[in-house]
Amino acid sequence: KAGVTQTPRYLIKTRGQQVTLSCSPISGHRSVSWYQQTPGQGLQFLFEYFSETQRNKGNFPGRFSGRQFSNSRSEMNVSTLELGDSALYLCASSLKGQTGYGYTFGSGTRLTVV
Amino acid sequence: KQEVTQIPAALSVPEGENLVLNCSFTDSAIYNLQWFRQDPGKGLTSLLLIQSSQREQTSGRLNASLDKSSGRSTLYIAASQPGDSATYLCAVSSMDSSYKLIFGSGTRLLVRP
Image (cartoon, rainbow over all chains, first blue to last red; front, side, top):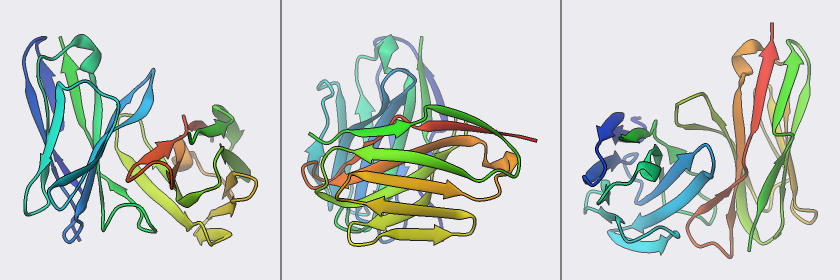
C-alpha cells in the first residue's frame, strides 16, 4: 500500500515569492495534517483537513493557507515568503484523525528561502 | 494546555545495550500516544501507537508503555544496534487539542558500534 507522498522533496525560493506544496494521503485516509519542523521550534501544527473542511488551524500568520480536494489530496500555500519560513514541511494522513487512529507521515518537503 | 516533554534530549550508548526513552505529558485526557523515529532530514516513521485504554504495545525489539494517570510513557529498546541511531519523538493526541498531535522535542539517540 502506498504511503503518504509529498512533492516536491526540495524547493529553493526567494524572499517574497510564494510556494505550493502537495500531499497525497494513503488511499482511504480522509484526514490530512500539516506540520512545520525547524531546529529552533521543533514540530509545529499548521492545519488539519477532513473531507475538504479545515477542522483546526495552528498559530501561523495568514500567509500560510491550505486546502483539501475531494480525493483527499491536500495542498498548502505560503505567500510572501520570509527567510524564517525555511523548514521541513511534513504532511500526515489518518483514517479519520484523532480518536484512536494513528498518523502516518510523508518524507517531507524541504523548503529553503534565500 | 497539553505539554509534552522528553528526557533525555540526547543519549549515546554502546551497541547491545537495552535503553529507555522517556516521555511525559501534562494532561492525562488523551486519546492516544504515538512514538515516531526520525532520521536526519527525513520524515517521521511511526513505531508504536498506544490507545489511552492500553498499557503497552510491542513491536520486535521495541516496547512502549503508557501510564495515563501519571502522564508518562516509556519506549524500551532491547539490544540496541547502530541502525537504531535516530531521533525519537513522542506525540499525544489530546482531548483539548482537536485533530492535532502535540510533540515532544525528541531524544537524539546514538548507538556506538
